[in-house]
Length: 447
Image (cartoon, rainbow, N blue to C red; front, side, top):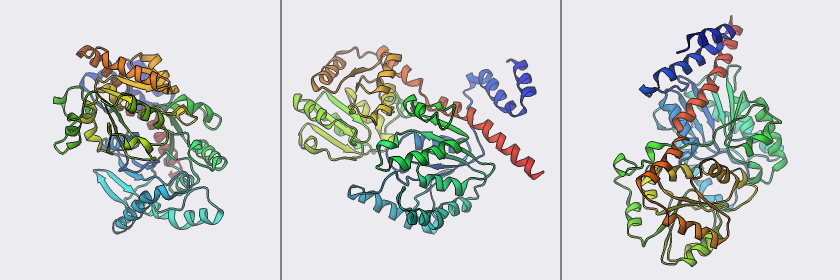
């Protein structure tokens, strides 16, 4: 261990002592598999998805930080647009959650150290009267929920850059709070209020003490608002996606995996949201071209599937709990990422790729920028355009590729580079100094 490094850093800046010690201890104690994450903090997540939606980085990060000894208040999605008819079930669900949580001061506990708040708010970017109702009547209920949990001087971690999120930030932030904006979506492509969103996102970014993004396509345009954005693609929980079935990843209640075993082979699969960014025309053409194959799409239906759902060799098991996905993926012969090429998918980083690879599966994906960059670095995927004959050729090549233990281990080794534990430790290295600075400034004000 380089003690001179620690001493020099301490002389240069006392605030860096904790960070330096952490890094040196990590190097010295790596064989012991110790973890180094922020702990003992109150953290409020302003999320862009519901807690019970498809398990993504939002829930994974919150869960890991809770396990590390932080108290979490997870605020469910307050939206980027006005809901329509297709959102009726989601709106009804929000009303039910909000009503049931009234007895517990607006929160429900979903795990140790994790409370979830489903706020009832009016949609963002509305007229002045609507914003005033949110600011004066509805958003303060979230502050009341945080206070009921005894939260103070919180780390505010927002995934949303809307005016509603900005209102929450202003209500919840204190001089000792740290604001972190994690940009995981190009919301300009998801809302009709592009100009208003740019204004609110600029305000959130400029006020942030720290900013993360999942890819350079999201970080570079926002550097004009916040310098030094750190790139953190969503990771993978290797324990949840074991290479060997004997290591876990399945549950006794997982009947859908048994259903897959009865399907005609090969089984070509996809896991994730079945949304408007999926190329449905491509999927119909593939299923028609190979009627003897089984095509399986696991996830919530977020868009009309049209002709695809009527084909006898196409199967929709629906949204499955995260703990069941490993067993489902194990039943796939080839895994796919069939996304459209668009302004939105230009900044999409498909998390499912590392989940597929962690289980040693071959992956065929359409040629969107993040997929292309990933494959240029690792040469582990089959990447093709959206022409059905080319995508089908990629699947056939994947079916004929070597399927031995060495191939599976190489795929898992690539996935291991995105392990969530390492991601969270790297994030903590950046967050902790910001927290320490705010704490010391607050202490000086009180002296």
